[in-house]
Image (cartoon, rainbow, N blue to C red):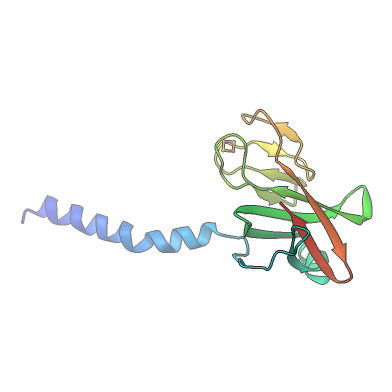
Length: 142
Ligand code: FES
């Protein structure tokens, strides 16, 4: 084997072995799935204590879609929920607490907490979902 071929194989090996670490580093959301969905279509997302301590609750898979829930800035009693799939090309947007916006890591579209579009290239907002609090539980309906 030539030195150049050997070095290429080493490079491929390093890339392949570091890929799972890179993917894990990019995942910042909770991967909790399989939360039971009630007859009225609501799914338990977490507790009010979790919501208040984390500011945003995210789940990767609620009935097949990723969601984010947060307190409604306009109403301390209310909660907002959105489908976090970007309408541009379906990357999962992330909450930017510094700017108080959802930001898309793929092409930098920006969305308000309620999902309204702030800046493209997306041409529309995030899908808004029903959310509510019952006792100490945060619920979302997709
Ligand atoms: S996928 Fe979100 S801006 Fe392109």
